Length: 369
Image (cartoon, rainbow, N blue to C red):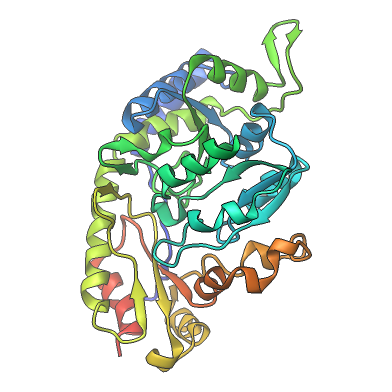
């Protein structure tokens, strides 16, 4: 192995000459933001690729979460997961909404639908699940609960780009789904994000809200925010969309290599592909049982780092452990045993399209004894 670091992710980069060509078009048009031609093109191409009716682009992946809550007029309490990136719960906090944490299913890491109903109160107005590591939630069960109690469902689908169940995009579940196009994701626009919605009227409302509420030069129809994507990142995204399938195929090969090598290692577990699901291989988490493995998760994590293999304890600590949220009744660790078990045992291994065979072998050398 050379002296380079093996990182947990590597961004998908467009062809430089092609990108320069699009930048020249932007420069010559002098139209660099505010719903330009590349912005419109990317929205249409993403809707087609993702098999969804409507897409609205955002400047990052957090603002569509915040805006979805505004658009659906969600208030009071929202049931969500502690096993996610903090942006999920921060979006609630910024809207003055109380998050109510519910434990996860160890088989997926996703919100356990069998535990949702006991957390519903008269103040509950919505459920915000997360497709953790791109593994789809039990959307039908969650929707049945939401319909029974008259709740909205907003999916944080930051990891679920292109994920399908039985040929149907998982992004079509619920009232809205949001995506992140951060550089660490399977598909990226450097920074960026999107919202998926079901009808044109809702898209129009979202497009107003992400542009200060403007519906015309002198007409403001609501208290919006500035969260538009610019033309440069839209152009970058157009080019990356052309190569994302190839990147996902390469990531799948990495996942297969990891599974083949780790399946017989005592004390190490991982997720297999789910039947009927088109995966995007966004992450490859392993879980360490120190009693069987003979080493704690953190000892293995540090061993990897010393060998310049930069895994990530993702998600650790739980959102419910951060100072902002740990005082909530639902954040009590005794209510979240599965989430704590996962958070305290997880390491996400390097997983990206640019990993070489020697990189994969070096990662495995740190784990397979």
